Length: 242
Length: 294
Image 1 (cartoon, rainbow over the protein chains, first blue to last red):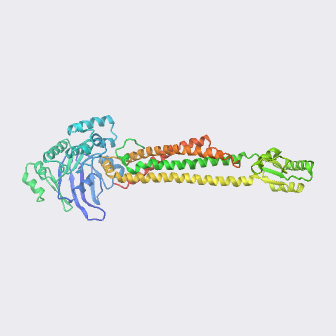
Image 2: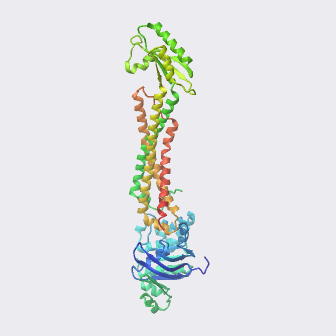
Image 3: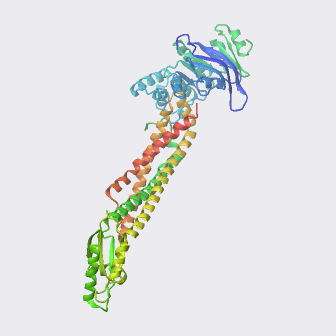
């Protein structure tokens, strides 16, 4: 994969569950390395399905999906774990493993990649300090607040320095103040070169940050250019008028 | 191949907590079946090789002609038997020994009280195709009423029967092993369903199927070992009690069924075998089931 190869490229992608109707139809877009996109659209429009295709939880029913230059349709099962290690995912419902401590949850991507325990300890402790959870290292997820769980989930997603970071409604369970803090965290990671896609319903965040928007509606997808500093355009993008 | 550290809460599965006890029960049955196979095998081998005389010549006592005539008849019989091709040795069984052999039926009697037949043990050369019927006819012509008992015939039938029982016991052992593997497959599949979400998280974070399978295999192996040890701990006292009871029967008709040292050693290997079978089965089950996912 060279520097100009898109991180993700979708061409005429369709997705259906079983024999049901297509939830995604002819989705075509390309994500440049180091870009930051919001993914917006009404509930049930297919945002989560699109993210599932991007974090390789599903294969498309039709069309082409290229991630890091690899054709996902033809990739073998053994090739997928290496691709997934370049992807970080923050789930709306966190998906933390309740029986593991905060430390072990964050350490998970490093453990599956067979990183040495001493390196894991150093990296995880550093990152937990950065997200303000050093004092909760040994706590289990059920004892953490929503915001803390969200930060653990983010820490787990970024611990292995992914090339592509996806977040599904990361601000859904936190107040606006915490929501903006989390977004700034994603922007920091983006500045370090990580490609970021954030699925959100939070209009205020999309308007204020002004990154390009991928709007999904009726199974189709439109990419709306960034509106940084152009508040009106951003508002129109949210309402699907661009 | 196996891992003790686990990212999945496998020890929390209600079903997998029963697995050691299910395996213990199967190892217990397997130990009984295996000791049956080993005991019967050693019995058949001893019968096969340990029979001192494959033929017995029985000359009925003639009360009317008296002792001298009996001695003459014995001498004639010994001459015929010794000269017969394939006979290595012919020896007369003493009256005391005959009385001892008859004691289970007659009780303690004196030799003078009953007309005892004269018995001759005949050892034959196993490399020669020996025909006992011709010898019997020869003897009967000279000494009417003389019989030749060919132990080889009934011994062969007895050994065949023992071997059949041994085969059945081996079949039972195999069936138990397959049942144990089936139990592990069922428990592992249930575990895969129960932990489907956590497994998806592991996959998304970049875990190979091998990484996940290793955790299931490690857990199944430890439960297989634990169950195997429970099972063998229950089986050994049972076998000792059975051995003690068999010894007390004092039937005299059957030789003692003994368990050789290697037999005990192979029984002690059962927990290791159950651990190995559990681990390998769980690993294969996980690999096969995960392959159906993306």
